[in-house]
Structure formats: structure tokens, C-alpha cells
Amino acid sequence: MESWYKEEYGFKITAVSVNGDGSARHCRNGHESGDTYSCEYGCPMPKNGEGGFCSKSMFKVFPLLEAVRAGGDLSNLLSGAEKHKCEFICPDGVVKFRLEAFLKKDFNPEPINESTRQKVTNFIAEYWHGTDMLIRGKIIDMTKVDGFVIFDDGTIIGLITYLVKGGVLEITSLDSLISNRGTGTMLLNIVINMAKQNGYKRIQLLTTNDNINAIRFYQKRGFELVGMNCGAIDREREKKPQIPLIGQNGIPLHHEIEFAMEL
Image (cartoon, rainbow, N blue to C red; front, side, top):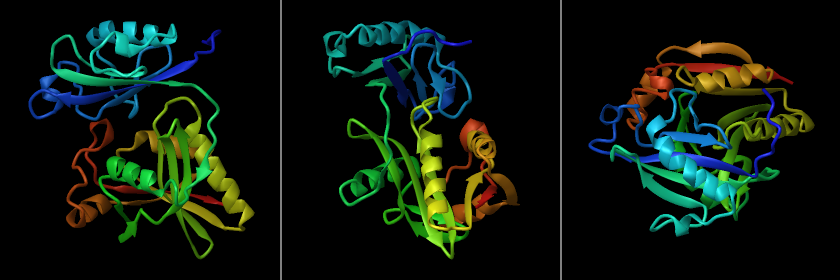
């Protein structure tokens, strides 16, 4: 199916809180705190590819989407809202959602520099359980890695970071907060091109056994699955207890999977 109309706005919807302890057992649809969804016109789709947005909550979401598309101001509809940002409670009174709208535009990755470093650090701390990352058994200070970042009105919507050692570039993180806009591919390609220009011989990275989207993403873009380190996450969890036991898609988080591209 091909859309005949080019949407001007994209939307991000986040489950801010869930009654009780924030777990899915309090919500019939299984929403948990931190669940993130995105859409343009159709139904919000989950960032991790699992589950769907609550159909009852769509009765509240759809009028808000239409108001933004029509050029309206959400602050005229909901107390405490901003023009393109608001929070609302699901019809059952269980889940609080945050809706954010953004104008679609052409995004341009830019290198991380001194002026953007703090925003990048805060982003990494939020999405990666802190700024120290265990990679191949070593602690990496993510406040010092190189990379490229994509901003939308001052908010980070895409980030890739990397280290280089001995002619090998190691991707340490890749995040894209907007689905189906090509930001992840854009960031990956800029790093691949940079690596080729600098004469690096190999790009490699580790992901985890729960990250189905990443496993699919890298293979579709020319990376080969070159190894699996069973139990690696269990060992890393001993050093970094904040690593969760259950990962994306409800899959127990145990193993590292390695991908590589020879240049």
C-alpha cells in the first residue's frame, strides 16, 4: 500500500506511568512505564516492535492528533499542555501517556561536539542505564565517545557513537527515536562512509539476544553475524546490576551477538 498524502507531522507517545508498580499486570493491554510508540497518521506502533497501542486509548489520542494536523494548539484542549505536547490518562484511569508532535523535516546528522556533549550524555544516561557501558568485558566511558547526533528543535531523536582502535571501528550505541524516517540508516551510513574515508578495515558491534530489531536491521544493511557470546550479559550484570533481567520483546536478556562489516 502506498500513501498518496505526505503527512506534515509525526507523533511520539510514551507511557509515562502505570498505576501500582508500573508493570504490565495493571493494564489489560500490557502497557508498561517507558513503552514508546510512534506514528504519522495510522495507529501508533511500538518502538520495540512488540504489541500494539491500546484501542480504547485511541479514542483519546485521535482527536489530539487531528487537532495538531489542523494547526491547533493542544494547550487550548488540555490543562498543563503545551502547543504540541500534552499528557493524558487512558479511559480506564490506569496509564498516563505523554504525546509529543513534531514537524517532519529533513534531518542532518552532526558530529558530537563540546556544545552538544551534555545533551548526548543525558540521552545516553536515560536510554542506556547510565553512562558507563560494558563492551567486551571493559567499561567504556560513554561521555567521551565520538559519534553523530540528530536534533529536532533541540531534542535528540537519533544518536550513534563509536570507538576506533587499531583500524577497527566499534559502534558502541545506535538509537533512533522516530520510526520509519530512515534516521537509524542515515546515522549508520555516515559512520560507514567515514570509516571508509579514514581507511579503517572493519566495523563491528555487539547487540543482545533480545534486540530483534537490531538483529534484523544490521543484517539488512550488509553486516554479517560473526559470533555469539553466551551468558555475556549475565556476567556483565554482576558488574552493572542495573542491567535488566528481561529485555525487549519480553525476552530474557542473557547473550551478546556480534556483527561485523569488512571494509
